[in-house]
Image: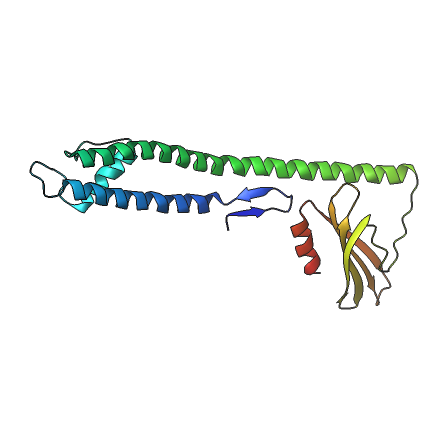
Length: 212
């Protein structure tokens, strides 16, 4: 999978997948350019590139911008191939360094972003709790299809978990946060419970909704 969206709504690209695809592209370039170089150089008097392996090694060294000098072209066509590989190699090195750098930095960046979102949500919930305490708001939990506490309900279904009956509702609050509310009634204990689970990403909320 090229990309995914975590439960905080952050898009994460599969950089290992991209790196693998890019490695295959580089290998194809080496083989094709090596074939071209071998075509121009093989069998000529004075040429030191005598095999297809020698040609691929020369191309690889040119692409790496190292260039050992143990093999080198003597024909115009061979020199054009190797000269082109220096340019291609410089671009490839920049792409590889960029992918690897992002692979490392994104682990820290997304982790920081996720923690910050979680921190802001926790602060919001604490403020709501203090607001309820200050105004002595007593929220009575009831059981029913309309007892979910969601500002904008979208979909709902009934569920049964052993002795519990439940209404599972998915929707959004006024701020746009996705919520899945589990309003359940235990027939054995007559206990009513309202659990709310918040999501930034709609897909994650819907997956949770389907599984309950």
